[in-house]
Image (cartoon, rainbow, N blue to C red; front, top):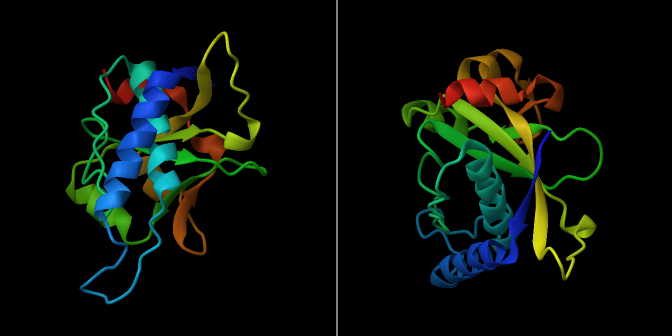
Length: 171
C-alpha cells in the first residue's frame, strides 16, 4: 500500500482550514439541543487522507469541509475518503449507520481508506513531510455485501480493500 509524504505546507493548510471551520461552530446543535461529537482533529486527519488520495489519483484537493456536516458530499466525484488513525490491529473502514443511506443518495460509488498515525510522525527537517498511507478502496455494492455491524458503524475489514477497485472507480 502506497504511502504519500504530505508536504508541511499542505499539512498547515489542512490544520488552518480545520481550525477556522471549528472556530465558526460553537459546538451546539440547536435542533437537538446538545453538543455533537465533532472534533477539529477529525477534520484535520480527514483532510490529510483526502490529500493522500488526491496524490494517488492525480486529482486536485478542494479542502472543503464544514463543522456541522463534514464536506457535505463526495470528497472527489463519486468517491468518499475515510481516514483511520487507529494504531492497534486491523485498519478497518467505518461508515456510520445513518451515513450509508446519505452516501447512496449522493452518488458515492467508492469508499477509500487512508491511514495516518500522529504518534508515529517524525518530522524530518530535510523532507518536511507527514506520511499518510492509502490502504485501498471498495465499491458501494461490495461494501454493502461485506459490511459487519460494529457498535456505532458499519465496518469493512482492511483485507477487503484494494487499490485495484480504487483505480477502476476513477478511470
